Length: 147
Image 1 (cartoon, helix red, strand yellow):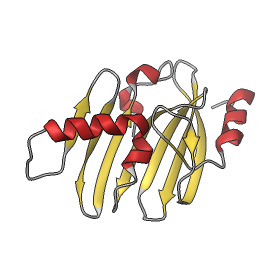
Image 2: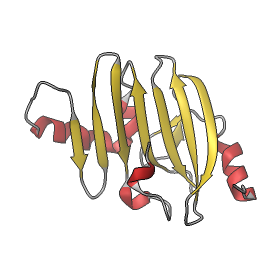
Image 3: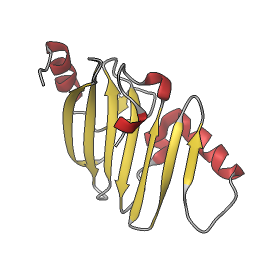
């Protein structure tokens, strides 16, 4: 894969940033370890992924567009990350949808709205989830690319 100067710039610009809110600009979190990787979609659009291990052991991946906006996030680990900070303005959507959902034995949530998709589930020491803004995907990026 050939990395363009623009992608290299994004890589360097975001190398020191740990986390960002979905749909927003990057902000700092308490991180134990972070790796930043520049990527290109099949259509040639650039984006950066931040793969971070939080101090709690939870792994968080953020997908940041060339414009610096987080368009997707994933998490997996023993403790839920701060979803209010991770989801940004979409946290309120998650809370509202969760209040309407019937209570079941498992802590599983799936929200599929045109403006945001949020999937979260798990139990103590085994949480995982993902969230993305479909309209903000770079050209050639699909929901299947959110891992």
